[in-house]
Amino acid sequence: MYHQPPRAAFRASRLTPTTFLIKEYDDVYSEHPHIYVKVDTQANTILIIDTGCGGKSNDQTIEVKSLRRFIETVAVDDNNGLPLNKGANMKYIIALTHCHYDHILAVEDFKDSIVLASGHSPSFLDKNVMPEHSLCKNLGINTPIFASTLVPHLYDIVSSHGGNHRLGVTILHTPGHTPDEIALYDEADMMLYVGDTIYEWEPTIFPKEGSIVTWFSSMDFLIAFVKGKNEERKLSTQAKGSATQVLVNSGHQTALQPAVELLLAAKDYMQEVLDGKRSVTDRRWNRGEETVSYGKTGDRFSLRCPARLIREAREGQKITA
Image (tube, rainbow, N blue to C red; front, side, top):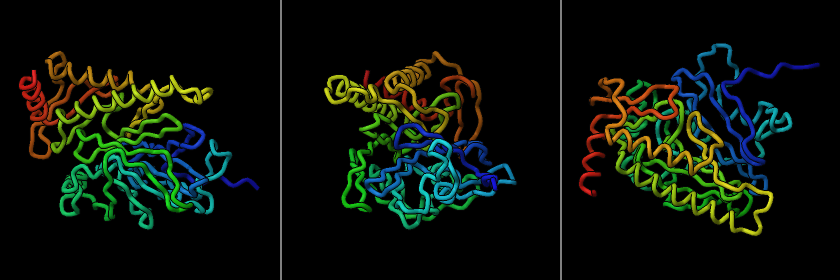
């Protein structure tokens, strides 16, 4: 007898032979976050990049609100009709691209797992400031309680679940959107996961704790990093039949896009804002500061941030010119 699968707050699709995109498609915050899941059977490990909004759906008929339950019990068409971690046989490692609520609200599902976060600015992730820095306080919601392992720049993720097994994924410090922003690079798949550093079709939002000056530095690093990886693959005699260029995957909207083109285009757009070639489309007060918007939802790139960050970036470029 056919049984209708339970209604879930998530949908999963395959990106590569080992990696899936889980999208929380109708959350109450209208964030529609991207959650990435890399399955490494040799390491008996599943790497989860961000955990989304905790299954808080607008649809009151949703039966599966837990991200962990979805991964362990809900059939995925792109996985031969099986759950991504059937029987919960594999262990988890969680990597948080940054601490904003729409990336951490399901992290308490994985209290028995290692949670990796940026070691760039440990004070930013102190438990006493997490309600503010996660934006949970601003929304009036509970801040998840969890312990993080803060890792350095260029940290290679290793799983101890199946011996000391390298997952082939490197954590990169890319502060700017927030001080704790990271990207992750999957060497075998040539996939770059950038969190909220860039994405398309919705406004890129900087909180008051962000820095456009630092963002430019991180973008320059990522562009050089990706160009280097593309050149390495081009010259490699062992890469025949495999990926030929790095693709970028974001915390919202964007997935499987050529990384160099997108990074350069996003940087050019931001420079146009600083050069006065883009006009302010909205002004409002948020978290105690004037916030300005450039462009609108539906544009390939748009921006929302405290006006102070624009002034600081313009002043910084004058000083270095």
